[in-house]
Length: 301
Image (cartoon, rainbow, N blue to C red; front, side, top):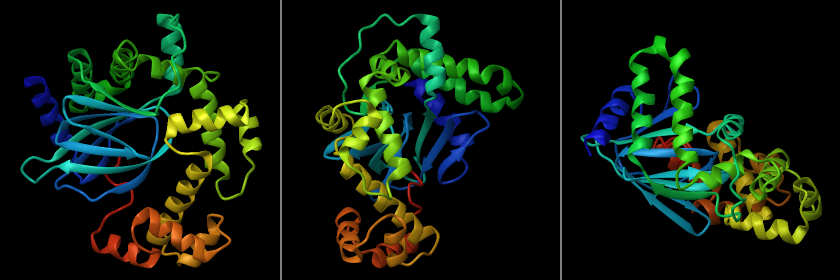
């Protein structure tokens, strides 16, 4: 408990702004929230989130993950999620560190430590696990480096590697190994996800995506849903709608133009699907977000 308090003090000191705070350490971000939030839609990239204070709920499809200072969340591929801070206040803000996972670093470390473990079954891209004392110690030393910026160029990568090592030898080690191997089932699904992200505005045949992933169409459907809790077409729809929402809110684009920009041919279909995902039609949804000063993804994941 004392070690977690130490991490809380450190994150509180170096996260000055509400939402996501960048740091001088590559791949490390600190997140602050001073009140519970409504549900926020975002695209979660491969990352780990370790909460020092507060509580969070993250939803992927119909799967729900709740975590606090005793557990960390890991994401192994880019996936649309809905995030919600459950516990936070001015006196006890939600404080979290996020480390974006580097596949190249993972692969290099596996070469060094050896990787003789058999490939694990392809599971959901999100998972929660208990925070171990060794993992917490590495996280504390990583954030503490912000006190001595001159040490970061020399020690930042070393401490980051230790944190990743603690993950590799922990409960989620098999998941991280899959991330590092491009020909694992997870690697194949990741190729499909990257292709969808680059081409989500265009219609596609499932065979095209299966060829990109180097899988059969039936295997792609099965494993894609295991990883993301949605089908490839549902994933594409989420990508389209989240980008349209960003265009409307951030770039002040009208709904018809935004729907066309993300690949919809029918404005009425766009409006129906937008309302189904975000709970209100585009114009009303944008007005509500502006009134509450909520930026899309500001506190997600």
